Length: 83
Image (cartoon, rainbow, N blue to C red):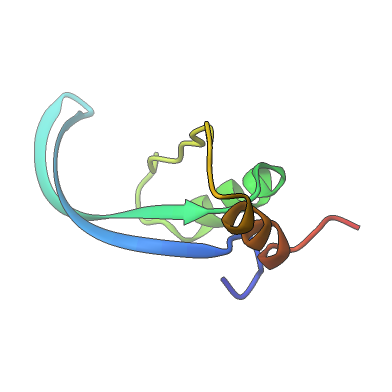
C-alpha cells in the first residue's frame, strides 16, 4: 500500500489443500484480493515475490468484466502512475 501499487487489499483466511514437490499439504493461509491497475502488475508481482515466504506464491491477474465506473476510477486514482 505504501508503494501505491494497489488501491485496496482484502485479506481472507482460507484453508488450502495442494500438492507441492510431490507431497500433499493442508494449510491455513491468507488470500489477498488486491485491487489495482493492470499496469502495476509487474511491480506488484516483484514486490510480492520479494516479501512472500513461498518459493512460488499464487499471483494471478483476473480480468474485470464490468464494474462501477466510479469505483474503477477510484482504483486508478489510488495507484502510482508511471512517469
